[in-house]
Amino acid sequence: MKTLSLKLDDDIYNEAEKITSKLKLARNRYINEAVKIYNLFNKRRLLKKQLENESKLTRKDSMDILHEFEKLIDEA
Image 1 (cartoon, rainbow, N blue to C red):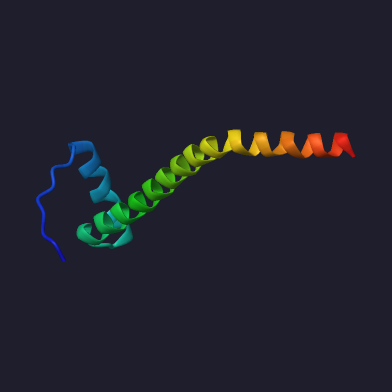
Image 2 (image 1 turned 45 degrees about the horizontal axis):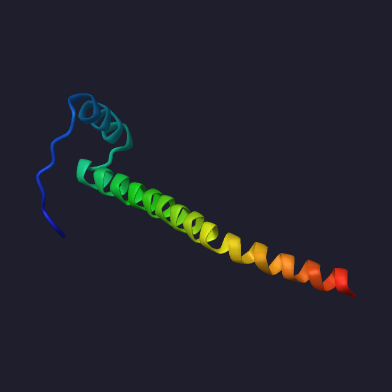
């Protein structure tokens, strides 16, 4: 486990303190879970962006192949 120093805005800190006391959860555990969820969220966002970019790259090739198939059907 890594140790780090963290600066939070006062309102974020106060809200986290209220929630952790109601949940009876250690602040450290709460922050770890929050970062874990945020990491998952951002991994999905990055994957979505990557898939969109790759889709754009293959779009032209897919349309070219479709036109070739249409030509073959028209010739038959």
